[in-house]
Amino acid sequence: MIDVNWTRMENGTKQEFEQLLSLETEANADLVDRILDQLKTLDVNWGGYKINRYEHSLQSATLAQRDGADEEMVVAALLHDIGDVIAPYNHSELAAAMLKPYVSERVHWIIKHHGLFQGYYFNHHLGGDRHIRDRYKDHPWYDDCVYFCHNYDQNAFDPDYDTLDLEVFEPLVRRIFVTPGGHAELT
Image 1 (cartoon, rainbow, N blue to C red):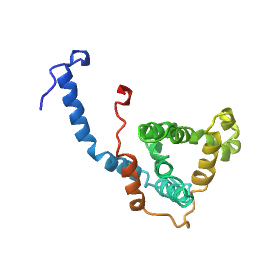
Image 2: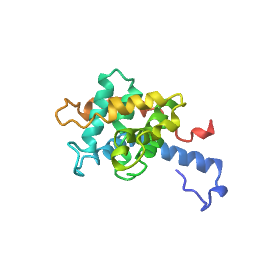
Image 3: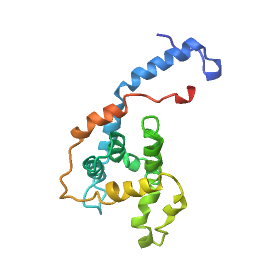
Image 4: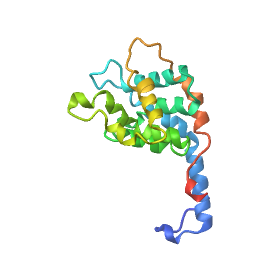
């Protein structure tokens, strides 16, 4: 193993960057465990809702799975609010960025925009425009995002719903995150 001999990347060598990439790959071997640990940080009661965000995430994934959604969508439903703790005002973008190297452009777009689309259910109660999502009305995945929000998000706050445990979804997360997309701009 080498240590780099530079303090500025522009002075690095091919050998140094190949070694760094190898170390990064080793360090990311536990990526799914870190993602699942981050998801579990939602297991706190912030008040107001009948269930917490962790339970909401599990319920969203359960709804998607029982609806026959593909694995990408089930995992996206599970992780769609993962950014709530550290990015409460742009959690959708954080979740989408995390998923982007691993899911289709369609699923990425849905997760990126679900926060805005979700406003359909409450914006009008808070003095906002419930139809703000219509700015994307002509987008090919508009209806898919409406469907996601209606069937897997806005209705996933039921404490009496038979929600599946995280262990059911862990193998799906491991399959989706098996192919790293890091440094994808190289290809």
